[in-house]
Amino acid sequence: MPKPRYAVAMAAKTAISADEYLHTSFPGTDQEYRDGELVERSVPDYLHARTQALLIFFFEAFRRKLSVFTCPELRVKMREGLYLIPDVAIFWPSQPENVPDSPPLIAIEVLSSDDRLSAVRAKLQEYRAWGVTHVWLVDPHSHRLYTCDAGLNEVTSFTVPELNLTVKPDDMFD
Image (cartoon, rainbow, N blue to C red; front, side, top):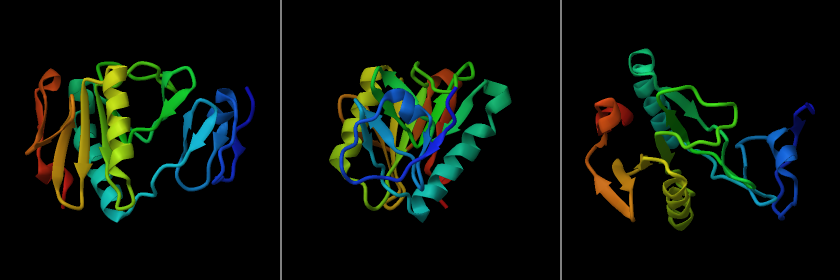
């Protein structure tokens, strides 16, 4: 197995192989991979990071009882040539592989102030098309929650019937 490389983020499109991508570390925020090209992700701000941490703590509290596996910023293989990185992925009922190629139960994206909503919406739709049962968008700046089905639907809390859980705003916002 090749040793991981440390790459410098590039503004221009760069063609690399999926294997090279999987063995490369990027400074700062990890990058996603789309058909040979690296795709930069938004840099998380404080509210993004804090909300992500609270979501992780919430699900980790149920780790043993419900066999959930909470994974922040895990590269997932959605198809050959497409690797995305959900802010938080919840796998159930078994632990995922190092680079999962099966959908998690829940994929969560948390907005940062520099996110483009159109790009985030497209990513959420990709999760749905891949087979993720619960696709959520959290806006920590406005304390708004959205589920992604055919479109974005604002909700007051998230429910996970499979786990008999409800995630309320108080669970993820200070």
